[in-house]
Length: 321
Length: 318
Image 1 (cartoon, one colour):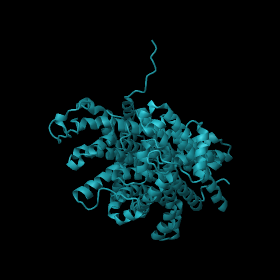
Image 2 (spheres, chains in turn yellow, blue):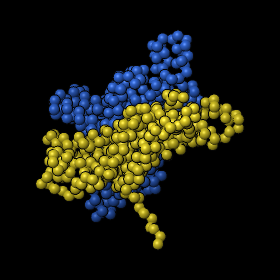
Image 3 (cartoon, chains in turn blue, red):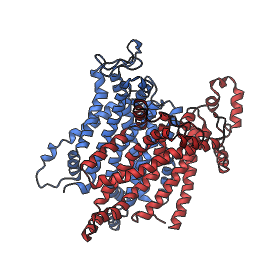
Image 4 (tube, chains in turn cyan, green):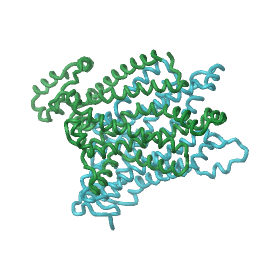
C-alpha cells in the first residue's frame, strides 16, 4: 500500500526543536579539551571556544532550549484546557490551579502561553531559515558575478526592500487566510532581502581581495572562488544574520498577531494573546499581557545573544591561535 | 563621480518602476473580489453592479493594460481615488505625510544622535561595565515589539503617572500636532527607543571591526593619539555601514511607525495603510507604498553615493 502524500506535518516544530537542541550537546567543551596538544585546531573549534566563552551566547542557547521544552514538552506535563470557554472562571488572578491566572474566556494563561509559543517559534524559525537560504544564494551570485546580472538582481532587491516588510505581509494576510505554512512563506518571501544585500556586499568586497585575485591568476574558476574563498569568508556574516533573522521573524509574526492578522483563532500566537489582553490592562489584569510580552522579549533577546556570540566566534581576529 | 551619480539616479528610477510593478502585481495576483470588498458581500445579489464597478475601475481589462493605465495616471500626478474614504488619494496623502515627517523624522534624527556615541563608547570600552549596560539596554529595546513598548509607556506614563496623554494628537493640520506636542512624546519615544537599539548595535559592531584593522595599528605605531585614531580614522570608517543602514532602515522604521500609529491612534500613513488594507482599498494602498518607497529609494541612493565616496575598496564596474 503506497502512502498518500501527506500535508505539511503540523508537528514540524518538534523536528525543528530536536535539531536545535542537539546543537548545544555537540558543543560541549570536554570534546575540545580532549584534543591532543600541538594538533592544529580547526577554525570551527577555535570559533567554538570563543562562542562557549561568551556567557550571554551560552545563556541564549540555554534559554532557547528551555523555551522549546516549555512550549513543546510543557503541554504534555501541564494540562490546561485551551478550547472550552468557561465564563465562571474568567480573569482569575494567578493562584492555586492556575499558576498564571485565567483570561477573559476563563482559559488557563500558562497553557495558552505554551500552545501560542509553539506557533510563534515554529513560524519564526522556519521562516528565518527559508529566508536565509534564498537571500544567501541571491546575494552571492549577484555580488560575485557583478555587472548586468548584479545590477538586475540588486535592483529587484532594492525595489522589494523599499516596501516595508510589515506593509507587504499585511496586504497578503488580509486576503489569503494565514495558516501556518502560509505565514512561514509570507515572512520568508518578505525577509530574505536584507540577507541577500549583506552577502552581496561581502562578495563584492571579497572578490577584490588579493587572495581571490591571486587564485584567479593561478587559473581558478568562478565556482572555486565562490565556494572556497567567498562563501567561507562570508559565512560569518550569514550565521550572525540567521539568528537575527529568527529574532526579526518572530517579531513579525507577533506584530501580525497583535494587529489581528496572524494565525486565525482558535490557534493563536503570543502577539494575538497579548492583543486580546490589552483591553483589560486598565483593569489591572496584568497577567493577560505581561507573560506573553515577557516570552516575546526573552526569546528574541536569546536569539540576539546567540547572534552576538556567533559573531565573536566567526571573527577570526578575536580567536586565539 | 558625476557619472556614477547619474547612473545611480537612473537606477533609482528603475527601482521605483519595479516597486510599482511588484505592488501592482501583488494586489492583482491575490484572489478576492474587489467589488465585494468595497461594496460589501450583498453586491453578489446584483451582478450588474459588479460589472459596472469592474468597468469603471478597469477590472475588465487585462492586467497589463490596467497597469499601464494606472502608471499613466501616476505620471500625471493622479494617484486615483480612494474607494472607501470618498477622497482622492493625493489629498489623503497630503494630510498624512506631514504627520509621518514629524513622527518618523524626529525618531530617526534623535536615534542617530543617541546611537552613534553609544555604539562608539561601547566598542571602545568593549566588555567593560558601560558596554554591558548599553548592550542590555539595546538588546531589550530591540527585542521588545513596538506595540509592547508603546503599551508599557502608556501604562507607566499615562495611566500610573498621568504625565503624558495616552493618545496622539488628533487633528488634520500640523498646527494641532505642534500645539499639542505633549501628546507626541510617547509615540516619538517609542519609535526612537526601538530605532536607537537597532542603530547602536550596528555602530558598535562597525567600530569593533575597524578597531582591529591594520590602519589602526599603523596609526598607533606612528604615535597618533588615541583621540585622533578614534575620531579621525575609526569614526569615519565606521560610519560607512551606518550610512547604508540609514537608507535601508527607512522601511523598517515605517513598519515600526505603522504599529506605533495603531497603538497611539496617530492618523499617519501607517494607520491609513493598516485600515485600508483590510478593505482592499487598492488606490490608497498603492499610494502609500509609492510614497514610502520613494523615501527609501532616495535614502538608499544617498547611502550608495556615500558608500562609494567613503570606501574605495568597493569598486563599481563602470
